[in-house]
Image 1 (cartoon, one colour):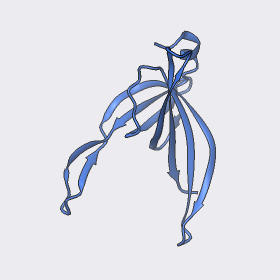
Image 2 (image 1 turned 60 degrees about the horizontal axis):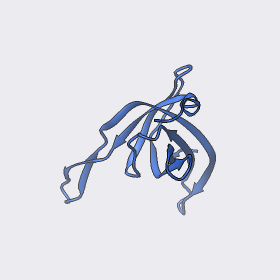
Image 3 (image 1 turned 90 degrees about the vertical axis):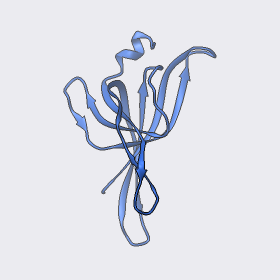
Image 4 (image 1 turned 180 degrees about the horizontal axis):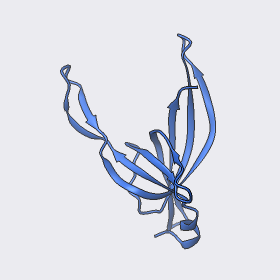
Length: 126
């Protein structure tokens, strides 16, 4: 369990979804759904600088990088995704689905897990 000071900065909630295989399509490729693993998970989402990319065919997209923090016992992996991020103070929602790129455990000292962080990204139109 995280300490009270850390818990007080978790000003958002989110939904964690985990990919689940459902079968195969007509071409033999595996198909998936994204059922909710956990909802209303306390967290803190921080936005980082955005990157704009352009393809050879002149299509543009913005890649938004984010960091999200959780209490240490939250079950999250690099195969998950985040949705329904809501700021608890005013119910303001951040729309979209965020891919989990990396999960990192942060320790107080060499033996005590303080919190869990995940690096996220989201691709959106410019």
